[in-house]
Image 1 (spheres, rainbow, N blue to C red):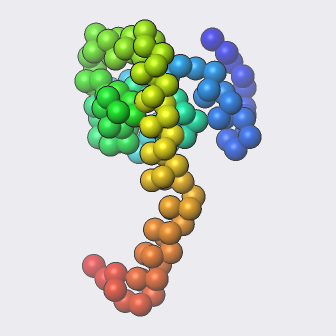
Image 2: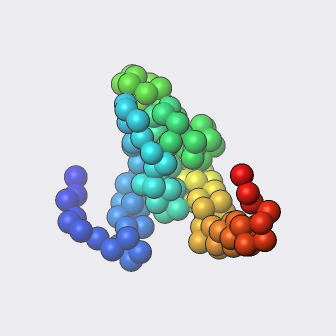
Length: 128
């Protein structure tokens, strides 16, 4: 285990994420969006998350990470062992996770979405 202290989210975090084989986020109670999941994915690390709505909405189970039943320790253990025991699968999922994080949630994509929303609001097309 490494206690590295405060790190820059831009310069240091990707390297620290890549020190691990996976990210485990076994939440058992309400969890928001899960930025830590996206950070790991963008670093090429496959996540294992609980089936709660926030984190599990970011992961396609078996493709770019794994989803374990919330509160089920045995299921979490099985999912983590799948990645520990199969380096090829772990690497494949990590690559897909990175592609997804950059493609769907990268700054370019987020900027395009924000620009469209602001343009729609300014033109009156986004009135609810």
